[in-house]
Length: 128
Image 1 (cartoon, rainbow, N blue to C red):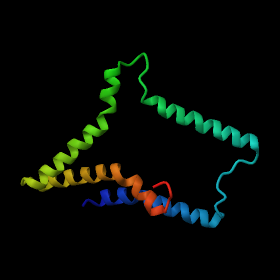
Image 2: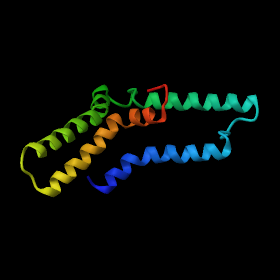
Image 3: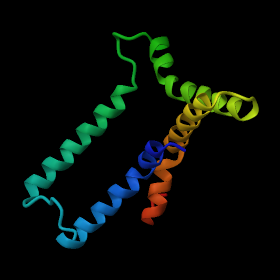
Image 4: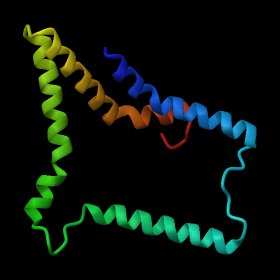
């Protein structure tokens, strides 16, 4: 496997490790609101952010429904195509460079599919 692929796969784990070291030295204080008004402002901002993220996948009057459907199917279709290309390189004899590229793309797809759950499991989170 390519070293860049390995580094990108381990990057979230490294981020969690750095975050744990910082929390150890700061006693987990982090950035906390000083007043109730600041806490309410942060909650409102988070609500607005979540609303904006959910509105991104909702079709509006300017975009046709079929265009929105095609756009929302791009990631799953790309995932299937990349995995099929990878399995093709496993079954049939292909050039080493093509096989390496297919392997790296497949590794990124597998991390896209399962990486978040893996990181949550490694954290010991109850959300997994």
